[in-house]
Each structure stands twice: as structure tokens, then as C-alpha cells.
Length: 314
Image (tube, rainbow, N blue to C red; front, side):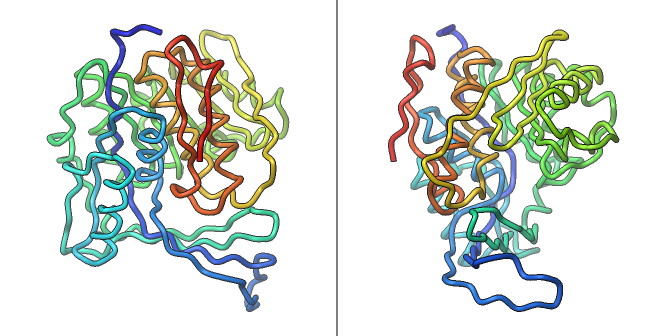
């Protein structure tokens, strides 16, 4: 590990109030299904990724927007409770705090409807609140306006810091933006949307998809493949990182965000991309063993000598 590479993780993204209902199955159109219980928690891809990075033991700055309401106050306090720096998190009276409405079935799979709310007010002016250094890792996703994503990526290029773009949900970006991008993380449907193709159906197709993303000029492409782990492509070479088998699958909500957050944390600590992705895949797997998104993330100790000794604690 390169000690000179130690830095912060700066996450620009969404923060939502998660409203999660557990039901035996998803309802059909027009059907009512009785659920067993409902929970309220911290969510939003940006907030989830910030928490996952903080749980991995790095300094994390979160940049985003909440409403001037009780949810905004409680979610800000929750982020602070996880050790996330919220000094760049602002409030707006123009919209309520974002929310995500989640149904989790008996198999742990989820269906989600997101109401962005205040997240739409995370404008390109956020770049003034970033203050990144070259050694930092900057993370952004598709749950903030596209023009904000573009401004953040441009700022990262100006500074020369590493950037992880999680294009989730997919938003179309100019080809010039993807060219030279350091790390792109997408799942199978998102990768297909970027390429205008069909989602890969097996590991071989996932490898081809990752290479095709690199063909757009992306330096390192990561395609997550659920229980299969992830595929990394760079320089015409692919590397498959398999996922460990979870002890049980309770709730898959936020598993991808756990992967992205720990990936960024390991990179900020100076680990290689392959080792960082290995730790990230473990984090994503462990998160499905408990209910919720941010609340399900274990604490990870990333060993100074490498990631072979990654230890997950609850």
C-alpha cells in the first residue's frame, strides 16, 4: 500500500428517508398485499456510500441537500452518528427531504420507488464545497442532477484526484465525459444502458461488457453481477472478483452502495483497485445478511499490509 496515497473520501450524492415494508411477495398491478412490518431509516445512494466508507475507517465528507424538515434534521444527525462529516450538507426550503419507498419480499429482493425531493437542489455550485486534494477519492452517482455530476467530474479532473462514478440510476452523459474516467461502477442493466445493448446474462458476457465500457475510454470499468461478485476491466484485461456466499439473504437494499463505499475507502487508503474491489464485494455480500441499507453495513478493518485480513464486525 502506498502510504502517500492516503486521503479522504468525498461523496456527492443523495440522502433519503427510507420507508421499508416487508411483505411475503411483491403485489401485482392493482393488488393489495399485507406486509409484516415497516421501518424508517437513513438511505439514498450518496448517504449509503458515505456510511459504508466511514465504516471502513476513512475520513468521509458528504456533500448533498436535505429539506428544512424533521427528516432532514434526523438524517443529518444519523450521518454524523456514523462518523460522516456533514459540514457540506445544506438545507433547502424549496423541497422536502428525499424519500425512498421500499418493498422487501421473503427472498430478500426489493422493489424501490424514489422521490428525489431536495436532492434535485444539489446544483453544480456544490463544487465550491468540495475542496478535494489530489490524494482524495471523489464519489458521485446518478441520484443528483446530471449537470451536477458533470461539474463534479470536471472538478476532479482539475485537481487530479481519483473519481468513482456510480452511474446508478443511469443518466446519459456525453461521450467526452466517460473518456478518461478513472473508475466507472455499474450493474448489468446500467452497463447495458450505457452501451445501448442488452444486459449480460453470464460471466463471459459480463467480461465482454466491461471491456466494451473501456472501449468508450473508461480507464477502469467495474460491472457488478449480484451474487456473482464483480468484473473489473482495464487495459484489455478482465479480472473476476467472486462474492462469498452469504449466511442468509435478508435484504439486498443498499448492497451495491456498500460495494461502492468500501471500494472508495480502500482506494483512499492506497490499496490497489483489485484488492479494493475484493474488499468491496465482501462488504456488499455481508450487507444483505441484515435488514436495511446503511444500518446493515458492517465495520471493515482494511489491513495496512493488504486486504487478505479484512475483518467484518457488526
